[in-house]
Length: 266
Image (cartoon, rainbow, N blue to C red):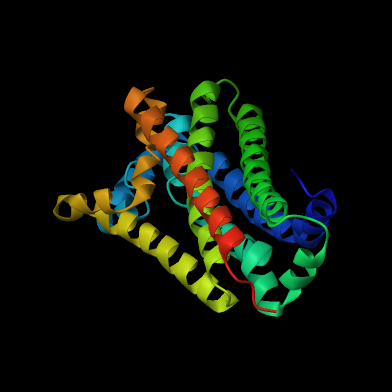
């Protein structure tokens, strides 16, 4: 089902993009883990109380008393959502809409390969990029935590936290991918997908500012990435995680179907 030559080409064409985002997340991940200190947590708590709305918007109002809580709030509350999302928007557009927009898709379709095989290869490429970034950050942060604060990190909860984060990225990748499959013009693909995803993030930020806007959490899928629930080992958090995976896969399959049936301009 996989078109191996196309897959190899995409890896070669996009690995630098992956490295850039991995490098940025490496810097932030190591910096945040190194900041963990119960005494520092008290200082951050006092700072948060002085600017509660700003800290709440970024999910950093509560520093937490343990390393897993600190990491979940300061790294997975915003940075591990937004940084991979930017990569996803760029990559999803490159994999389909960019080819259509530049006319290169016609050359791909002229090859003795079915549309389904082409689009399935692009889906696998996108998902593997997300998986590789999540696995990399999981290993990096686990190693850093064990090196700096041996025995302090709840590794099982941290692994589950990363599974949940991966589920969220698969969902957002599905949103971006279906837009890339629908639009002929790359600017519309990027505009709509980035607009939707940015709206999800902004609504999530506003919903965390105070009880007055708490109802907005039901208007964004980012709420399904329940970091507190995952750390607390709540069954509901795992159900939300599964919903993200299923919806993301469903969106990609719908995008595949749309691509197979649409007319591709030459």
